[in-house]
Length: 254
Image 1 (cartoon, rainbow, N blue to C red):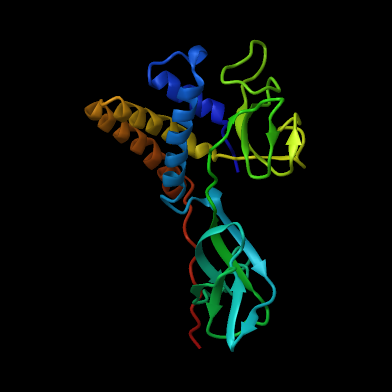
Image 2 (tube, helix red, strand yellow):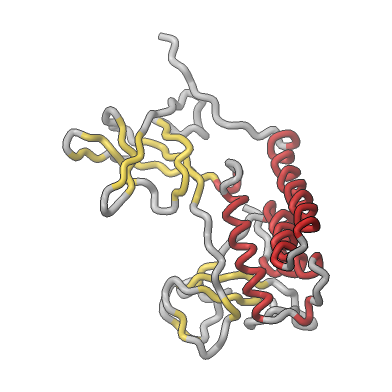
């Protein structure tokens, strides 16, 4: 999946809002981050974008009280389809009916019969949240926390550093640590990827939210329309230019 640095989204949004990219404050950063977080979730769930779709094979269906089921994949958001074969490898894959059932400990996909050869789960991966603040060398980061880090300058910064590429992103902490480089210590940190196709929409949607927060509701409506245009353009690329389409079901005729 092609991704975009959040620093690019942030820079575009600041300039669209008529602000100085070199004078951004921590408060403005947090405001724009929260706007981006809301818009990322919206666009993530807006359509079945191929960049977000995953297929996972589960070899064994489980049985409990005569009920056949598999556990919903940990990173799955919406379950789009369940197949008896890999739908990317054959046109004879049959769509399997299922019911989502939640217990106190897990989410399950329940089937009307057992599938001894396993099943293929087609799903949209979960949308990440953007919550981090500027990375600090003295802060002790706990698992699940986030930091905003520029891999170009190897520092926590909101502005570009002269002579360095500005490639800042949010990173999620995977292990308790202090002063470890988020971009080069994968045991401690995981980058939060944002699909490239969402960048133009999010930056312009931030503009709309910023104008709304300033009481400029008419201008915000115009900016909202422009953001929607960029979103529709990305969908057009997928459907018309790349001729992407959903998997057809194979129907037995005998």
